[in-house]
Amino acid sequence: MPLNEHDNGQVDESFVKEKEAAFADFIQRKGLKTTRQRNTIISTFFRLRGHISVEELLNEVKKANPRIGYATVYRTLHLLVESNLVEERRFGDGLARYEGHSDVEHHDHMICLECGMISEFFNPRLEALQEKLAEENNFEIYRHRLELYGACKDTESCAQRKNKKAAEAQGA
Amino acid sequence: MPLNEHDNGQVDESFVKEKEAAFADFIQRKGLKTTRQRNTIISTFFRLRGHISVEELLNEVKKANPRIGYATVYRTLHLLVESNLVEERRFGDGLARYEGHSDVEHHDHMICLECGMISEFFNPRLEALQEKLAEENNFEIYRHRLELYGACKDTESCAQRKNKKAAEAQGA
DNA sequence: CTGGATTACGAAAACAATTTTCATTTTCGA
DNA sequence: TCGAAAATGAAAATTGTTTTCGTAATCCAG
Image 1 (tube, rainbow over the protein chains, first blue to last red):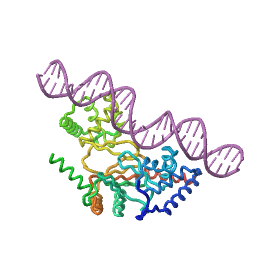
Image 2: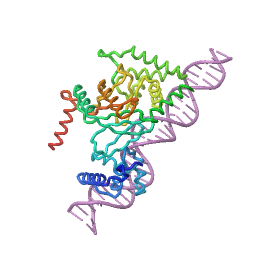
Image 3: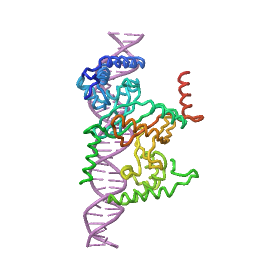
Image 4: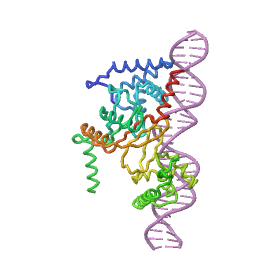
């Protein structure tokens, strides 16, 4: 379970605090109630890093409070999305994944189909080009999604593994 | 139900025939069997245009043969995808949509969140830029997906409707 | 042709992810 | 602190899709 930590292995407490405060704010504005369960869930969520599935989050949450179930986790995630603190993503494996906003407001994804790695990137020219195309098509973009599916290409990497597999199939 | 037709309203029969033949070929190569149901389904599918959901297709298919059910439609769509004659897409409304290959080999999508319109576009610079970014990140792209979500912007259009809604909410 | 193994069909059950229900508990402002 | 409003958790319901299983259709060898 990846933690939202610095390279030194420490969870970024100020980051977590900030998110907790922002969520408390949202809850208050909406006239909703602060509960132990929601606190546990969001605190747990923002200590995790990456693209978290509901099951992953629930497992982690249960360590703090085993009585919390799927329903509450789902409900809280919806609130997090509604509050704009979290984005929901789907990468085609049938699971929703949730991502706490990082410093980069918007970014796109590269998904390695060999090892499952998901990395993020952002490129202003790409964004500008999309805007230009939308303009040409008389279309107003609210949001977009760009996902590159493929393989890592570092030494002894996924792309190599893939090529090896293909070669074996060829030889057989 | 949009038909795969020319501007004059005629279904492109040669297109349908071509697809039927290609599917028959695939079925034969795989050692599978030709059946009335499959013929009905693919013939119906390729006469439709756009991004067809399973339910839409089944409804249309039932007009020709009411006894055909979901299972067979799903199974046939899987074969169509496997045969590379059709692509599966998901635009986040929880439904799989199927698209017969058009002349344009690859394309991206703009989805209007107001009226549901789905239009297609292709831009070589966008493709090239993606390749460049992948290169920089030591990543090999197998395929990608780009979807722009927003609103049509023509006169008396979806973007206007949206703004009107916002204005009303403001005024209220 | 035709038998018969193979494959496909269709209805219904199973599934997986997610949402809802409902009885109970908790929160929080008057 | 009372009580209305909201939240919880277990279980049931929903949704989209897949699988099962008994029956029917296909099609190749003979």
